[in-house]
Image (cartoon, rainbow, N blue to C red; front, side):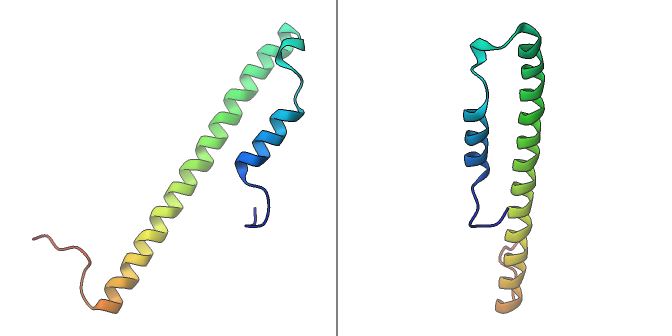
Length: 78
């Protein structure tokens, strides 16, 4: 996904808007819907975790660059 495209939230919103009304689906499809929603939720949580890890990696990288430029650690043990 590039920065000019829709966000994940916008894509999910669009997908949900295109789904059938929950009250109009059969019991069998409703059970499948529950399973699919759980899977989709897990996928979104995995994406969120990857984004959080990437933010941490970038912050660590920025801290190391600052330390190199300043010639001293940002944090001390004292």
